[in-house]
Each structure stands twice: as structure tokens, then as C-alpha cells.
Image (cartoon, rainbow, N blue to C red):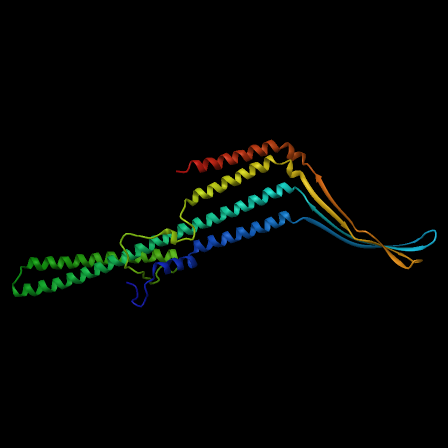
Length: 319
């Protein structure tokens, strides 16, 4: 039996402890956060342009027809380049769709685990009730045996009545031992779901209906839905995006680039003043085609279509 000093845990306390201590829930939450961070970093690398920065100085003396000039050319240049703009759009969309899948998978793991916790909670509560009831039956059987023993001494009943009472007490003791073993097992199961030592003393409030009655909407913030179907639907959406991406290969050949150069300075010794040339900026829009990728475009489309058909079949074949 559990230590009498152990306070029974309420249903809400058990759920709160599970959300903080259960290893499966903690791993699911950590994996979700890691995946989201990884995709954020990936999106940053996707859109972060390739930039080149150069600083140099070139000085030159020149003599014109009427003046002696000193020209200073600071080579300050910033080049920005971003290739495959449309491909980056598709890749970013796929990463965001994977974020939704990871969120749903974590939700499913947490929901499944909490349902196990709920079942373990009610099983332990029921085992406590049965154990208490068996203990009461044992006390009643012991009292009856004492009464039958006194009656037997006074000659009020036959020895058969005494033996029947003795047998009833033994049966009650045996039933109590069995219920105590079941109680230990159910306590270990709940400790296991809570991530605690298996033999740790634990009690739950047993003043509950024998039949489990709970609202699963209160177990998780999300509504109870078919999470497996929702996850598969998101995988179908990812496969559809992959197919659209394969079909749009030619759009992915579009690239953007820009070039910025600093001012040029010329000092006129005769007029004793600096002449500033305007800065130069250039934006280029180009098209670069990978011939190998272009030749393999039909095969890539076919592969993406097969992937979409496969994911769609998995969704439609669900019971």
C-alpha cells in the first residue's frame, strides 16, 4: 500500500505532471522546436543573397592642357546576386509545409501520450477502489469469523458455519493480495507514463465514476481530430508543391543581381576643388539554364507525379 502521507493527485495535477515530466512529450516538443529552427535557418540561407564587398584605392596624377589634376579612385563595390528566384519560393513553401507536418506530428505524439496517462489514471483509481473494497471485505470476514467462533463455543452453531466463515476470510485475504498486486502494477504504469521511478509511492483521487468520463478537448489545446489523416493531407500538399516545382523549372532559371560602385574623386590643382563623379548602380535580370536539368525535366516531373500519387493513395486508403 502507498504511504499514508502521500497526497492523492487530482486529474489536472496528473496531466500537468505528464506534460512536464513525460519523456515522450518532452522529446516531441524538443524535436518540434528543433525542426522549426532548422527550417528558419534554411529559409534564411535560401534568401540570403551572395554578396561580394571590395575596397581598394587607386591614385593617379594627370596633366591636362591647362591644368594638373590628381585623381583618386576608391574601389568600393558591393555586388548582390540571387539565383533561381522561383525555385527559392517553392523551397520556402515546402519548408513551411514541413513545419505544419512537424507541428501535427508533435501534437499527435502528445495527444497519444496524454490519452495513455488518462487511461493509467483511471485504472489506478479503479484499482484503489477495488483494493479498498477488498480490504473492507477482509475486515468483515474477520469479524464474522470471530462471531462464528464465539457462537461455536456457546454451541449456537455447528462447526460447519465456523469453517465456512474461516474459508470466507481466507478467500477475502487472497482477493486482497491479488488486488494489492494489481494496485502495484497500475501504480507502476502511471509512474512510467509520468517519467517517474516505477516504485515511487503515488495515489490519485478515487472518488470518480468507475467508467472513465473525461473530455479529451481538455487534455490538449487542439481539438481531437484524426491527426494521422491531417498529417497525411499535409504530405499530399508537399508532394503537390514538389510537382508544381518540377513543372516550373524554366521559371527557376531566372536570376537577379545588382552592382553598386562608390563615387570617384578628382582634384583640380588649378581650381583647387574636388570634382565628384556620380556613383554607379546596376541591376541585372538574367536567365541561366542548366542543360542537364533541362534534359532531365520530364523525368523529374514524372518522379514528382509518382510521389504525389503515392501520398494521395495513402490518404484515400485510410479507413
